[in-house]
Length: 103
Image (cartoon, rainbow, N blue to C red):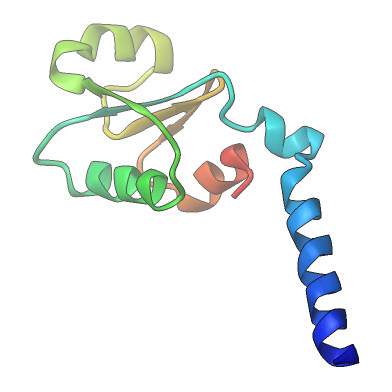
């Protein structure tokens, strides 16, 4: 019985700790996530799968209609470009995307 109650206490503490957002995780991705992509791009699909796996909402922008903007804003027309809270990641750089999203 005592072991069972201890397990419940630990589970409750973990649940409460999970509900309280930290300053870092509350800010990560809060200003929005956008992915400039093309339907044929395998790395674009990887970025979107990563975001979906972590239940992160994102906006998809067709890169073919935004090439001029991408060149001016990001200095590239390569895809994917993932924009997280104003910072951008060119290509599929999972470590950097995870860092910007705090996942």
